[in-house]
Length: 170
Image (cartoon, rainbow, N blue to C red; front, top):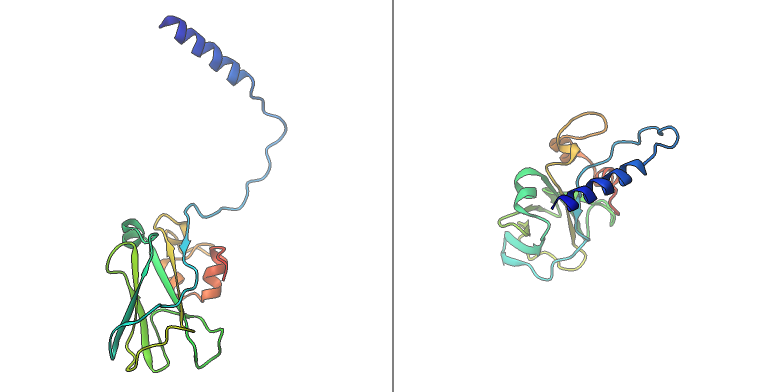
């Protein structure tokens, strides 16, 4: 036992003495986000369930864990075929477009449900959805400084600005 302790002490001394401080320390880099932001690819529903005025579809979302749902922010977006503005309009949810309300909810962890109150069944092709999940330990949720955004500021940001802030491919 004593031999093992002596060997560990000798080895530690060699490792520590091998480290040298070479040159001056460079300037501190910019502060980064300390958490992974999860986001889905754009996807279309395979089918809408429900009835007139109460349509929905579920999407598998394993990144929507209890911690993220309870302590973070979930942002969702829709890109609708036939949108009034143009084919590249991305709307944050909830939104009103094409004479209907579009929204989302999380009724169980690991899944996201998108909803629409159209009279007729919404299209499955051309309507695309996406979500972004920002964990609660992200600095953007802890501060309202110029660099960081509060939850409400994130919800009020344009889709392009959110993607830019979190380095998400649009």
